[in-house]
Length: 162
Image (cartoon, rainbow, N blue to C red):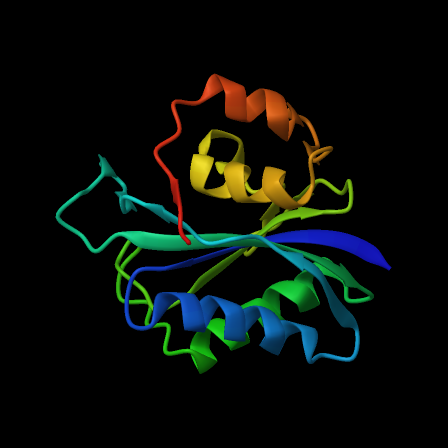
């Protein structure tokens, strides 16, 4: 079993319900087990140009999973779940019902056309690091270091939701 960290985001529809249901949906696969799901955190939408307060805000969470799947199969499963929850890919950075990113897959370093792990921008995104740190205080991004140190370097703009 490999420990995989996945980030969830949604800025359209029933955001919290979608994220919780998506995490459960992933764990319905016989080779995937949900170990922990963080609280929900709200953040400003990020586009190619940076933060965009004119877009609906995101709700974010991080889940820790154990899986027997290969990284490419976990990625396909995550894309399938996004599609089940109405994800439409019209443009990069567009608002979405659900976004699922593989942040880490064990300690593996992966770079293919479809998948880069660790996620190349996770280390600079408070909306990933803060929820992750909540459920794994000893978390590490391979090649980047301890998540707690990375969080302390960021001016966090995420708000924990009740």
